[in-house]
Each structure stands twice: as structure tokens, then as C-alpha cells.
Length: 295
Ligand code: URA
Image 1 (spheres, rainbow, N blue to C red):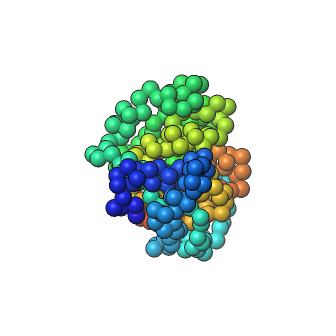
Image 2: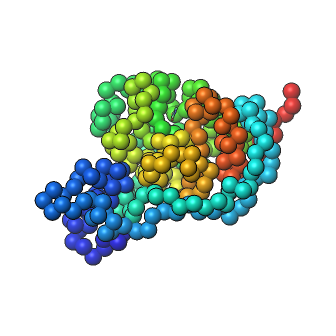
Image 3: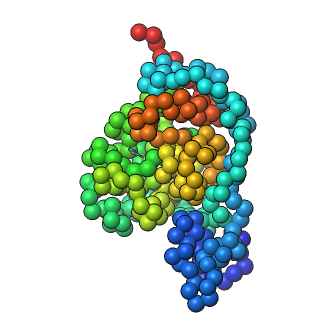
């Protein structure tokens, strides 16, 4: 990191400040005596903000599969134009705490799960039934990141198994993949009561485990499903509608954000946008849309 050469304790403090700033709770950690904000301290050690990157392959030309058509009610869409459009977003500044020194050598998914244990680190533990760690191929090229477990996931201990999960499964199949080919995880591992949006501190507590999962899997592509996943990983508070379908670099993986399947259940008209985004992912991974036999 750019705080190199500092005494180790100062490096550690600098990294924490960057992390709190990334989480947008930096103001809480203001140095009241000196009046110097954590944001200023963080910027001092920050590297340039991540920028969206253009895809180097055109999006897949293949039409939506009939599975996707029936499940996502796809409309025809202009495809290529959005793929390479690059706009700059005010996303995370500099290395996060995790990047700075929380990388776990020889980490594994099993070890991460063991470290989570029977977690009581935040209030979400109070009402949860099962911790929903993540599921799928530990060597997946493609990882989907959702927000947090809902009722079905909380009961079964597996992400995306309810109605939204069935739609996600259809999306995966439309990309000629199975759930077992990809990895699926959430930003928070415990169900927020009444399916409310996870709070910042809950995300801050839980997201290091997601970051470790992504670091172990090192997928080619990460698809963020919805605002919470996208904002948490990109460190922005902009709404997903500003950057949906754009490529970002995320610690060596390509990251793209698209609408959450639960949103699609409420707003079927947005399904065509999601299909457009998934075609960009297929282009990068060299996948073709699934051919579903006609009935
Ligand atoms: N919504 C999510 O974001 N994640 C799940 O696992 C289920 C629904």
C-alpha cells in the first residue's frame, strides 16, 4: 500500500482509516483533538480510485434462450452500445483494510466458514436460524453476490433457494450453466429481520468474510445482484441504476452489477436489462445462451 515505510502500527491505523472510509463510517472515527478527519488521513495513503473498465469482447450476439425468455419475459434490446460505455464513478478509495493486511495466507472456504463459527458478531444473529455461508463450485469462474438470506434461505442454510433464487437458477441455466458450476454468496450471512436491508455496521462486520471467499475463489467474473452487493463491493452509495451493466475491476476479477432477481419479480420489465448484462458476462466467459428444446 502507499503507507509503506511507516512504522507498522501507523500502517495499521492508516489501513483502518481507509477501511472505515470505504465503509463510509469514517466520520465516526474523526480525530477530535487534531480535527483531522479519517477521510483526509485515508486519502493520504490512498491509491487511485477503481475505474470502470470496458469489456474487450463484444457482448454475445445470441438471442435469449427460451428458458430465459419464458422466465425473464425478455424484450429485444440494443446490446452492444452499453457494453463499452465507460463513465467514472466515485467508488472506493485506496486499499481497504482487507487488502492492506487482512489477507489470510493459504485461506480456504472451509477455514472461512470455521472462522465465522456460530457467529454473534452483530445483531443479525438474534433472529437467524441458519448462517448462509455460500454454495457452489469453489473454483468457479463466475460468482453471484446477493444481499442477504431471506426466509427460505434462513430455513435451509443455502443462498437463493426461494422465489428469487428460482429466477436466479433460471438465469444461470440460460447461460448454459448449472448452479453447481458457479458460486453463490451474500454480503451478509444471516437473515435481516423481516427481510429489511442490512445496516451498514452489519455489512461492515460480515463483508470481510465475503471478501475472503472471493479471494479464495478468484473468479473471472463477479456479478453483483442488486444495490447492496454492488454498493458494498464497489464502495459507492450511488444507486445501481447509475452503473448497472458496466465493467469494473475488482481485485483482479471483472465485476458487473445487475438488478436483483427479487426486483425482477416486482418489475418484470427490467428482465431484458438483466439479460443484456448476462450476455456481457457470457461473452467474457466464452459461454453461449442455452438452447432449450421446443415443447
Ligand atoms: N436474496 C438475496 O440477496 N440472497 C439470497 O440468498 C436470497 C435472496
